[in-house]
Image (cartoon, rainbow, N blue to C red; front, side, top):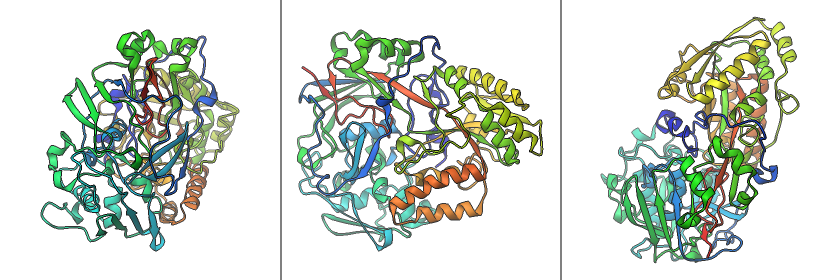
Length: 593
């Protein structure tokens, strides 16, 4: 998918709305810098990487594990800036929409919270997380007894088959495409146009009302993770209204949309046909959900700090504390039990254009000279950004292994002498680098920091500000005239399989391989890992490839990783930032008396 359709560059300047998955631009539009004096980072224990494992059939049984002190009933209010563009699962790829979808939709699989920061992939509508055979090519799911739509009718295997088939239809333009592609192994848009003309897919079998069999062309050991994406939630065949479904979806989850005034408000009421005994994922503790749109992050934060009246029962999905309130929120101990902290699950990079910066020693020199600590300070200090050292994000990569190829941990301010040494050994001891950046207040400041550091090493930096509206359009052109530029990416599930083959995949205008790295040996290795039926071995191989790519090619500089700090009202319990989606999960929310 063209990443431009999923760019959240503009909204990031005002709220930490990002994307769950492949096209995530990450945090380029981070707010302006916070004061550096008296900065304080939250305790490291508050943001340990999530632990994600594969659950069993027993784990897939409901009800969900209750958070400590849970209370059932009451009304909770969610306050944010933007309404949801899509409610049809087939059109959902944005993290905020996937997160909201947990309240009204269900899929074959999903993530069960077993403790804070610990999750298991389990069966949601399915009895388990799927049974794999034929070396990873065939996946079989069995639906649970008693799962129903909001009108009381049974959810069937035919609904599941229809759900996937309708995602091939021309009106579906935004959601994930993994399953469709795997079922056809060609341009899926040309292979099939959906079920509405009577044609069906023979690669999805429904031997009975409870059983669904997917037959892929090649092995996909992590297909059960793909099915957990919000975009693959199930749609009822009998109530499919095509384009209109995006405004009036039918609920399989614990709530029904009672009312919706676009861009202003929404209210949810209980779905009487949702059975907690079938659902290991959603607690659904409040009786009523009210959603309020149109508030900026500063307004929301100030309301939570004041904690007056109805705001005591309120929280936000994604409005993080803005820089001008960050130190106050971190240092005020009275807010400690209402504060949530989580690093971004996305990968953020400064990409080299390998068509122009051809000498690896120059690229290595820039990595060593990189002023990570100074950039961190500009972004607001350790409380606002962490300094990762790997391409894959430790918070959302199963089998993650750390390495530090450029000594960033020991010398986060950069190693100018090492950089000078590498430049002396290169083909161009005094190179000129054209650095393109998104013209936001923060990036203006960061650009000065980068320019000063690299010029100390003997690298001349020519800066090129780009309009924020067309930033990605400019850097994604293969014939661009830039040597270095920022970009972000996020995995669609916790594996390198939705990162490496994308950001180091095909080179094309508008594509995601911003480095223009072309290496047939690497392509073959990524294909081999992607088709490995042993998912643990595949995850280990992705991590090893992470380091190998940096050692062999040095195609990028690993950028800083933003940390979100979010508040909620004093009578809201169970509020936690989901470490994969980087928004507050609705599954554990409850209202205190």
